[in-house]
Structure formats: structure tokens, C-alpha cells
Amino acid sequence: MKIKFLNLGKQPITNSFLKNVDKKTINKEFFYNLSVGFDKKSYLVSLMKHVDPKKQFTDQYAHRASQSRTMRKSFKEIASKLKKRFKPRKCLEIGSNDGVFIKNFKKNQVVAVEPCTNLAKITQAAGYKTYGKFWNEKIALKIKKLHGQFDLIFSANTISHIPNLEEVFKSVSFDLKEKGVFVFEDPYIGSVILNNSYDQFYDEHVHLFSLISISKIISKSNLKVFDVEITKNHGGSIRFYVSRVDSNFKETKRLKLLKFKEIKQGLHKFKTYKKFSSRVSKSKKDLVELLKTLKIKNKKIISYGATYKSATIFNYCDIGTDLIDYVVDTTTNKQGKFTPGKHIPILSPEIGFDNSVDYAFLGAWNFKKEIKDKEKDFLKRGGKFIVHVPKVKII
Ligand code: TYD
Image 1 (tube, rainbow, N blue to C red):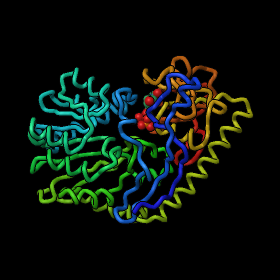
Image 2: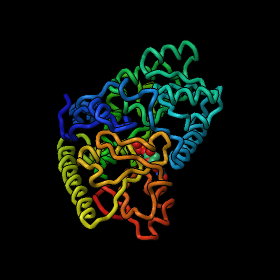
Image 3: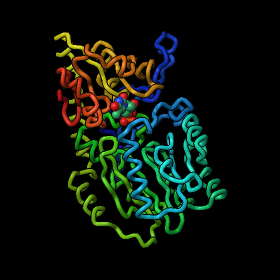
Image 4: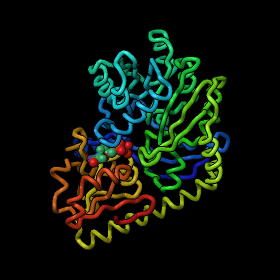
């Protein structure tokens, strides 16, 4: 049974950037209550109530993984690492976005599944067989029938978005070869607790995984985690290496070490999450106070990166255009729109990131290094970034 430990209040769908903010559009905007719970039996952290996936993964889906240099590099590296270690001849990707991972493979080697049809069309047009569907038993069985089973099944930032994990893993077991490997990665609850990055909770992140939770849940589908990595992706992610339970893959040293670390961090205890929840309240108080103090001094504050994560922050902390003038973002299909819930305008950096900006809140804090490298002129002329992780501060 799930027990609630965090309430982030009324929240919109993070991907629903508004084209305009007239009364009719605002009245129609969808909100739900974002609260998070811990299951004492499976150790899984999940939203208390999830949003209908058909409302989230539409043909208007905004996030394009290929648009970040950091992500392109990261997917290229993982693709080459997996090729070297497992030598897969046939791969399946669950949640292929705009093809940032599969483009590192030959077209005839890969099958992709992506429910956002605007994205599925991109990889399909590039010559990769792509099913514009949600990952479930039905599509898994269809793919098995048409393409057979796979040496490698890969998924990044997708499995944590799917409410029914038992169905996810059962479907994977249909399509995985006897000696095949399933590799998936998602934001890591251990990093969220450590960094106080409560903005990792939003409608799409139905669950935040730990090794101890996934090891338990996946065993029900006759699968086992045999290796694991903690990566810097998205501010701290966990990458699982999974095989059939009776395969020859042996548990690695780093897997044993991480299990030990998680127990030490208390990821199996409700108390840990309760304490985290108090730190989240403090973070809200500190951020609002800082922004208000700067505003009294007549400083111009903007936000850098119209991230999904920042939608959680702005709505939870009640930060609107009174404190943040606008958001800049390089993603063309976010520009000219308004952030969900708080309706802050989004501009291109070319227009918005000019000499009038004093402070930029790092909505895309997970790209801190890339952004700081790129914005040397801003820093040189005395501009400052604000972050909220692990603590609210000016950097
Ligand atoms: P992302 O990391 O996907 O976070 P989330 O999953 O919370 O949305 O989003 C990063 C956003 O930041 C994306 O919209 C692109 C934007 N961005 C910039 O505008 N400039 C940059 O230099 C970088 C790295 C990202």
C-alpha cells in the first residue's frame, strides 16, 4: 500500500504549453493534484494518482531529445557501449522520441515504439520502422509476430512514465531473446533525495526508481537486474541491465554496492521520504524569498529552460510573471508559447537573453555545465544564475 509523503499541490500537465492565454484557453486548462507516496512492500515511489497517458503523450508532444548537445553525446556513448558489450544484431527501443538513440544503429537493425505520433513520424521518415503506439502487451505481441525477438531492448526516460509496471516488464519478456538484455534508464530517486530535486516529480514521472524497488518488481516477470549504473543524465539517473532470471549474467560488484548504499541512504524507509518532504517545504520558502528580495531591488529575473521540471517548481511555489519576466528556451516549438499553469511567456534566447537580464533561474539545472559554458558573456558582464538544487542559491 502506498503512503503519501509529499504534496506539491494543484499542477498542470507539464507538456501542455499554451498557445495563448485568453480566458477561454485558461478556463479549459487541466489541473490535477500532484502528491507522491511510498510503497512499504515494493519500496517504489510513485504518484498517488496518475494522469491519463492519452492526455500527456499526444501528437503535440514538445520535448525533442536531439536538441541538446549533452543528450546527443550521452546517447551516442551509451549506444557504442552497448554495441561493444553485448554485440546486438537486433534492437528494439521503447519510447524512441525523435531518434536520438536509434540513429546510432543501422536502419535494418532497429524497431522503435513511440506513442507521440509527431515524434514517431520523424524516425519513420528517416527510415526506422516505428510504431506510433503505447508500450503494452498488445504491441509487444504484434512486434514479436512481425519481427521476432530482440538481442537488446533499450528504453530511456520512458518506463518510469508508464503506470502499470508489471505489464511493462511482462511485455518486455515477450520480446526479449533467451540471452537478450533489456537496458533502461530513468531519473533516480536516490539523486532526488540527495539533491532535493523535488521538481523530478511531475505528471510524466509516475514512478521514481531505486535498485531495491525494481529488483523486487521485475522478478515477477522472471527477469533479474544483473548490473546497474548511476549516471549524470537528467540530474541523476539509474541505468538497469536486465536479463531473464535463468540467464548466465552474474550480479556485478557495483550492483551489490549500490544495494548496500541504498539501504544506507534509507531508500527502504518511509522516514527518509518524510524528512525529504520537510526539506522541500524549506526549498520553496527560500526560493520565493530570494526572488522577492531581488525583485524589491528592481532586478530583472528570467528563467533559463522551459523544462517540465520548472513547471512543478513554478506551480508549487506560486511563481508567475510577478517574479519571473519570461523564460528563454532554444526549442522552437516552445517559443512564443506560455508555461503551463503559471502562463509565463517563452522566448528564444536570441530575443530574451539580452543585456537587460540580471538573474536567470536555471530551470534546466541538469544542463548547468553546458549552459554556463555557453553563456560566458552573461557571467562576464555580471549576470548571475540562480539554482534551487541542492539548496537555493545564486551561483
Ligand atoms: P529537459 O532537460 O528535457 O528537462 P525536462 O525533462 O524537465 O523538460 O529540458 C531542457 C530544456 O532546456 C529544453 O527545453 C531545452 C532547454 N535548453 C535551452 O534552452 N538551452 C540550453 O542551452 C539547454 C542545454 C537546454
